[in-house]
Length: 325
Image (cartoon, rainbow, N blue to C red; front, side, top):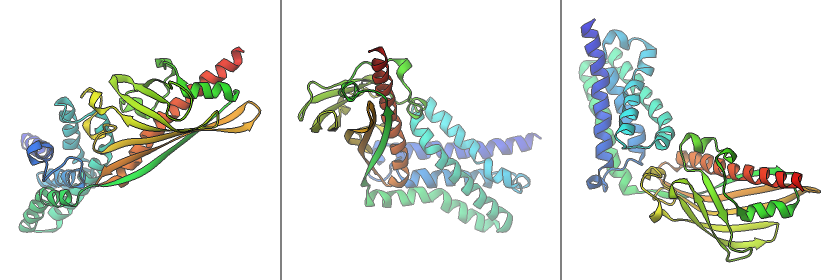
């Protein structure tokens, strides 16, 4: 029993150390020209190596179980998650985005290592394991040389409001202080992304400015680019990243940072019937990574959640004002 327990601890402990060392190397400033945490090499190959090492170090009797090969690699990954949060190496939001990838590729590494151990010789197994562990460090410099390609995306949202257009538009141009009970953000609250507080135009027209203020000192400078009164308003969005406290956002998902930037927003008011309107809000944002195909999915979900939250506030306030009149 003690031997089995020691073998199990070994199968978890060493892969966990591998994950921590990999995170340190990929995140070290001195290694920034060769490695980056925000890379496919780290997101895919590191958990794959952790999974392979976990199964390679496990007792052969347990490796024969398919469930063991799939799920045992999750243990060091979840331990890695806990330690990086504890050490403040990563934020909760960042982990929630990459955890599905880590778990899938850890299982793939475990399945492959299980097949190798059950079907191949020790010599072949050692060669395979060496390759699995070294591959992230060999591929990462090549990925850095290729570089990231910016991708431009849009997030569309809308809501139907039973109120006069004058009332709706007033709540569009001047979003007064949003109280906690008015906040309907689901994904953003779960990811602990700062919630919107207020945003008021200094006047209505092209060239108008406003500060969109979020919790934690997050501020966006907005300037109106196109304005059609009570119909359409397009505005540029410039995050004040130099004023954002370092504790507000994980650097990897910092809006206005190296990887995620919001560029522009548009409100459109569409008439449906008398005193019934559909308010559209869509934004344009930029993702700059080597895995835009995945990062853009989360970027769109986050932007849609933020936008839908603001639309809900505008709807509730507009309809409540109408009922009180």
